[in-house]
Image (cartoon, rainbow, N blue to C red; front, side):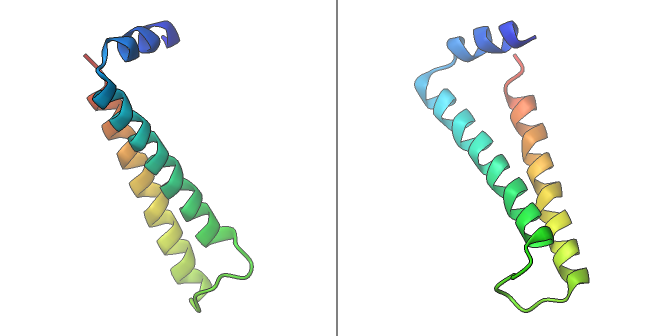
Length: 76
């Protein structure tokens, strides 16, 4: 499976590879941001823990939606 991904990546133009990299970068960013919101002890914004968990779960959910879109866009 990894070999097929590598072959598919080589077929892409430079622009498509760059957009794939940006997509993976933002997936990672939203995932880490969601985890920070949930688990950070000294959160700079005054929010109750229930709202922090809800906001963190929302960010993590959005990260996985982006991940699914990346996977769908890279299947040929």
